[in-house]
Length: 345
Image (cartoon, one colour):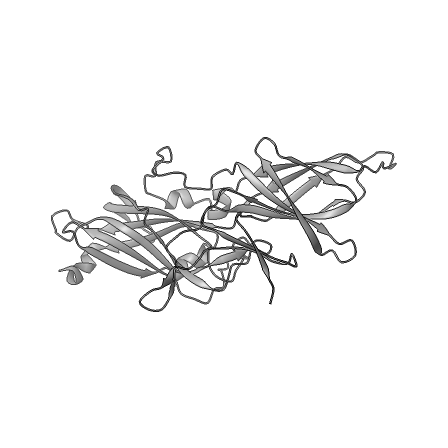
């Protein structure tokens, strides 16, 4: 069994483009240390969620209002770099040290004469547990489980924080010809954002059972954590609940998932952070529109508040939607309130 060290901070991993000046005469002068400058790029929602996500999203989300916040990922102010020495013969990591990179002060000095792996991630996290194995082969980020629900299923009431990062492998300064080096790092998400919009049809205001809001939205069958080196999510699943539900809005000319346009509907919205689906790399490219291969089912439960003061929960299966969007994006649930009349009466 591998032992773990627990760190209070977090990480994220992906791609690298390194450029070094070459001596035109090929007469390389070996230097003792190299000043490494790192430039970071935030993930593009259009790339993660598809170019049509803004068209799918119909809720009026005011990002300038602090009670709403941003829809996409925030720009990290400080990035922690865990830098690993690599064995010259085996290529395995055998030691590590830390550097902090800021938006302005983004450089660090590394000893010349070897190769390095770099695990980079934002530090502003509170609800994430980080664990690193003593053999430097595993580094995970996860959230704790709060207990079991009435059906004996693991539950978790807290979302993870935003976690962005990259794993840069094989940074070679074994025989540097210059005392400076530049690396461009594209940060990609470890924690996955889902934008949830609940469209309510025929939510008439002359009935006691009219929905006036919601107190919580829960999604089941989500992963409990992720390996920062491989980006593969845990097989173990949890459910995640958000209680940050934005106010109900009334919209005209609402477009449904099948393309139908309805004259009028109410919409609730929420932004939920998760680790994504279990047992996959959410950032791995799919071929020919293939879906994420996940074995479990996923359900969404919306805890509505009615005008008569009573709560009412509606549950829908969203397995297909999540498999089509393993890297996050817009999830739309449409509910015809008339279909529920016989239950609510």
